[in-house]
Length: 128
Picture 1 (cartoon, helix red, strand yellow):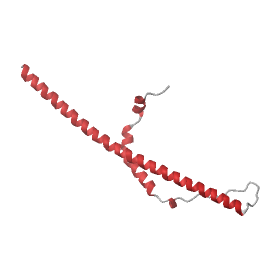
Picture 2 (cartoon, one colour; picture 1 turned 135 degrees about the vertical axis):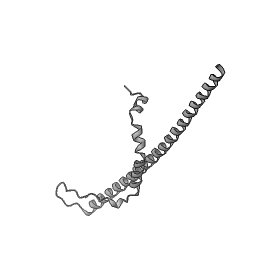
Picture 3 (cartoon, one colour; picture 1 turned 180 degrees about the vertical axis):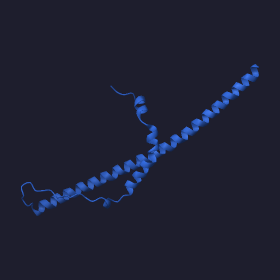
Picture 4 (cartoon, helix red, strand yellow; picture 1 turned 60 degrees about the horizontal axis):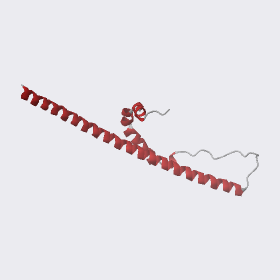
């Protein structure tokens, strides 16, 4: 049974999401600015299964395969970091848009209230 979208959206604490948007954006920028040399690489040493000394060619092949895997992981990490940064920027833009819409809504409510008061005063003067 699927949850209706409206009730699912009501569950999300949008106030918290919007209030944390600037800090998420700042953390994403910090993550992008961090150099890859900041983190110490984990040890790549693995014990041999049969205590045999691998040949130099086998070691070179392992090194090349591991190097390719590291390059691929670095590319993925860069892409994920870029995606997080873009999402944080979009979240910040959403925050500013929501703030602008709230201000516009307040102005419309005040204008509508003034219009009703004016119409009530006009009707009062016409009837009495």
